[in-house]
Image 1 (cartoon, rainbow, N blue to C red):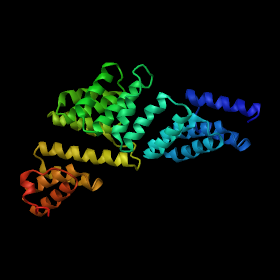
Image 2 (image 1 turned 90 degrees about the horizontal axis):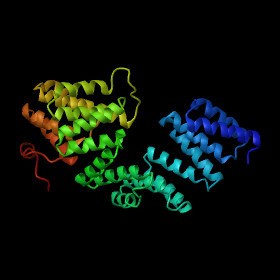
Image 3 (image 1 turned 45 degrees about the vertical axis):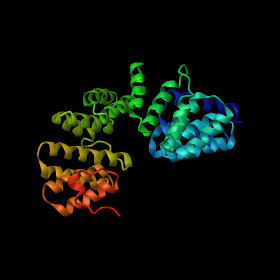
Image 4 (image 1 turned 90 degrees about the vertical axis):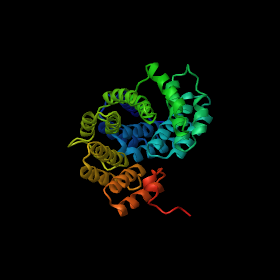
Length: 337
């Protein structure tokens, strides 16, 4: 147990961290100083993990290490399991997140906040049916209910039950639950249903709420393009990753960049500017070599240009990625044995 002076320092750091009133770098330095004096302080390790998380995704591994150290010192620190599970989800390690949440629920049965996060862990682990079952266990009166309903909608989308997912998301929006994740999910579901106007309206709301998110601008551009509003689509793409924007090396930004090239290529196709479309679609497939829709568009473009060999190459890649080929492309390929 830290002495009174150290405990007072921990309290000050905790207050600054949870209120957002302290600079993360300063809080990290203070917590490291505290742990140098009292390395067995579970709370200090927990707070250091939170401080690392507040710095950004680059420090996720350090945050995980601190949460695990806190739990090694005090296995009853159930909040540590919740924060650790969140960090594991951000790292794409859904199975580890599930383990921590199940352990937390054994310590505090019926804790709906933990159950709700377990819904998402199960979904990301490839168990959408289990996720949906858990989501239905969260009472509508519980504070975690909106998050659970959102995760339920995402599980329904994974299960290809789009109309039910739309109903869930629409109910959240009607109730005033409109964070960008909800409105963008609904907008994208509308797009997949062919409801371009509804999609544009909802994705515009999402983009206004989070203007710095490039993936939302790309989604809105897609909605504009499908609605025939090509100039507005181009405007959104230009704002998605403008010169000087953050382009850190990550799967997220590579996907966004590939989507920008893909959408630009499809706009050029609509404008009958095939050479420019080919350049954009080629850039997109270089960034994302196994993306079926991009290969499909390239195959159709090459076929229209009379470049049979290139059309066959991309049609084969599109088919291998699970795309359904139109008759004109399917006839180019040998029948699978």
